[in-house]
Image (tube, rainbow, N blue to C red; front, side, top):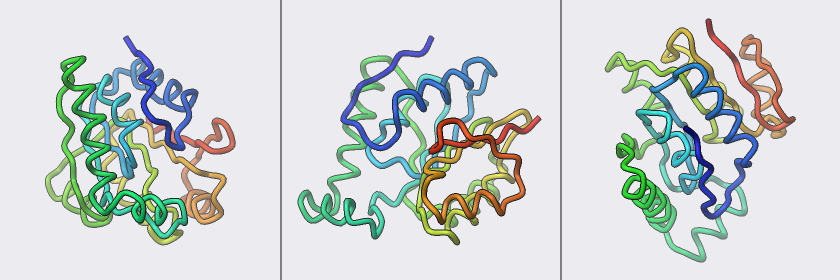
Length: 184
């Protein structure tokens, strides 16, 4: 049973969360990898599905909105906000605490591969720089279980769109911003 949690919004929409989690429930996906989580809005929804691994530096990016956030709140503010959101949901609904990897995605994905980890659902929403997105796609695909799905957020960003297009995966567009690749 999925329930929508209305925490301080970030850029992932309610419809996108309902689509991703609905598909995960329908397919019985229980092993979830989230690359880039900001304040944990998607994470708290994925926790309803099963075991969640989160990769994020919690340092933001060079985007102006990130710079302003850290200037205003300080360097640990994002992780504290994330942790507060996760703690609240785990306590209220008895969800398992996610595995949190405070790292760049390339390093964390290599580590997960070396440990033989596999995931049914992978949500790529980390760095929006072309080379980083390209690396995330290549490394994440190697961690994808069959059947499985990779979701790509922010297809409306040129570097993200380019990396996804060049990946040669048959990515379907959900809403102009969110795309997905089903692996059977």
